[in-house]
Amino acid sequence: MSGPAPLLPRSGDKRSSRGVCRPNWGDRLHATTEGPVGSEWQTLSDEIRSCTRCPLHRTRAQAVVYRGGPNPSVVFVGEAPGAEEDRLGRPFVGRSGRLLDESVAGLGVPPESVGMINVLKCRPPKNVFVERSVAACRPYLDRQLALLAPGVVVPLGAHALGTLDPSAPRITDAAGRPRTAGPWRLFPLLHPAAALRSRRNLARWRDDVGRLRVFLDAPANG
Ligand code: SF4
Image (cartoon, rainbow, N blue to C red; front, side, top):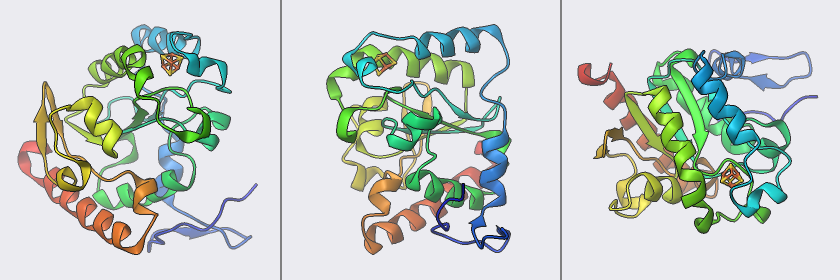
């Protein structure tokens, strides 16, 4: 089965015999190990997959745990799985995920050093974020971040930012600027789904991703 063409074609992309352009970087990220090797991560992942702590377990196809390398230096945190993620059991594999993969590929970070998770592990009905499920699901997020131990955490959108840093300003003011929340160095971005809603948002997204690249290139963040 082929997917739609990428949103931001890059010079290193390859084109399949069916004319579908696929980013090399994204393919490599999809192929990386699913999180740290070790029994603690495995136990946590199994807990998430069998969780019934909130009503979202009733409507999910499956809980969505993680996509990325075993020791990521940068972890992107979305809000919740969408339809494709729910179907495939992996975060950011729909249209938003393609934008994220293609943008992150330009950061100069190897796929093995990138991780992707969500605040809520189960798809909310109609993709409407369920604030009241955060309290039940939050311990999983904290445990994942503690085991992944990234140098930089990138909240994607208002719900991810508000969960990780309740004192943060609104996402349109916080995006593209580093900040600290507890033990984490945050670099918020708009949610890629929001970036795809308008040319203006997409331009803002690209600018902010450029700022993230500069931030990651700084010696203290290498
Ligand atoms: S959203 Fe989180 S707390 Fe709710 S059932 Fe899924 S894993 Fe459990």
